[in-house]
Image 1 (cartoon, helix red, strand yellow):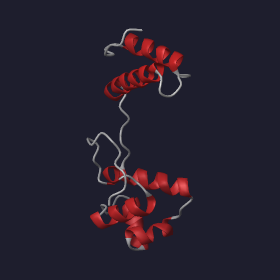
Image 2 (tube, one colour; image 1 turned 90 degrees about the vertical axis):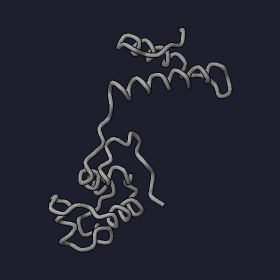
Image 3 (cartoon, one colour; image 1 turned 45 degrees about the vertical axis):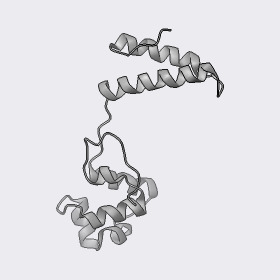
Length: 128
């Protein structure tokens, strides 16, 4: 298949089918290089046409709590007190920078999600 930018849904569908044929490519082969190129083209198309919205900061905290089986009391070291935990989870108190840093370092929630940076485009790793 000729390499080209994906501009239509038909281009995208054809590219997905072609990528599927390349999935058994071995490392360090021309086929693997071609696979990497097509995957990149597919990702570009998907990022433009099917963006994944960033989660709300509170929803991200709740999701991590669910993932790790945490209770509200387990957030006290990150948010400061039982009352602050309740206020943050009920959207009555915004996250402070100190809270964001602690949640990022302690629970691994990406900083730009906690900051509400929806236009950042990429989930950032932990703050250092």
